[in-house]
Length: 484
Image (cartoon, rainbow, N blue to C red; front, side, top):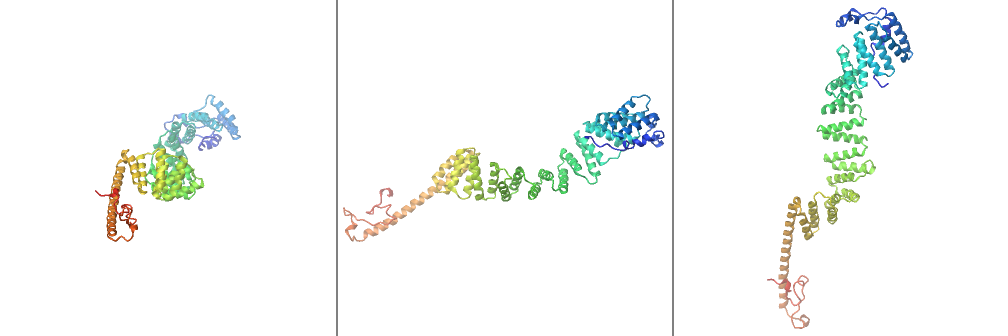
């Protein structure tokens, strides 16, 4: 049935009590223990009529006919002349039959009435308090159930592990976590060798009271005792992280993975992020790549992004490139093309990187497009396309966050171009001067044949390749190179 196992004690000794109904009376010790009871409460004997009828009804119980027994107890309770003790006995027995018939409400009513008569021996009354309290808890009347059981404790019932468990559960239902924790701890200690229910109940109160160190310590014991219980390990790892022991949480997750206990895609992704957090991206990328290939991690763009990020953190640009290429192809998103461009740039593929950065800008959705324009400029600088780089950096001037960097690059390139131009001019002047000396030497030499003169009789010189761009065949400096 769905109700708790009742305490024994008085219920187990009813038959013996009834059989001896003609001789049993209260002892002087019992009388002394209850001086506050009315005189009739100490008269604990059954009349022959009541006792014989109870024996008949108990035979029905023994045969399993609790309905007949309950009907008989109800009938007897309706008769006149019963002593308080007889009425309490009948109510006690009626409640037991009702409980056997899955009628907990009637059992509760009967037993409460029996207790209220204040006529039963203390041990029997306490047994009824415990049993009634358990049924009240099962019926959702937590406060009433707790009060009856605590009354039994106050009247001498020793607290055992089972009773402490029930009281802790009742207080838990009332959200009275302080007293509930007290009973849960006692249940744990009294159990001798605590089992899962004792651990679980104590953990519940630690959680409700946000007692993180206590939770962590208890879960540490649980994973040691039940090492195959994945839920305990994952809860333990979570608590370690919450209490500032992230490194320990990471190690617990690694243990779970190495033992084959992490199989869910989300769990594996969490472990990969741990690797990143603890600056071991290569291990995280290797693990994640393996799980993606095995199909245990879902092939979603976000998971491939994480894999690419891990390879990038590990500075494994070549391994990041194909992953980023796949992500960009799958999503077509600007930020994904930007990441691919970065990997290409890092790998020295500047032309391809430029194309990816331009593609990213074209597709949009970038958080800082000004920075992307400066990256375009960087790729062009690497390719010696200085004027194209200036164009890109000038686009970067449009945003405040990228303006200083872009302006710095523009100034650098302009100085570089000026230096190059000065260098080119100096080299040109040096070449022209050298050619002038060469031509002058040839002019002073003799004319050997008429082939050295043109139709007008002007000397023709055979110029070197270095001089031909600057002088005509007659040794005259071309107008565009004349010095002011």
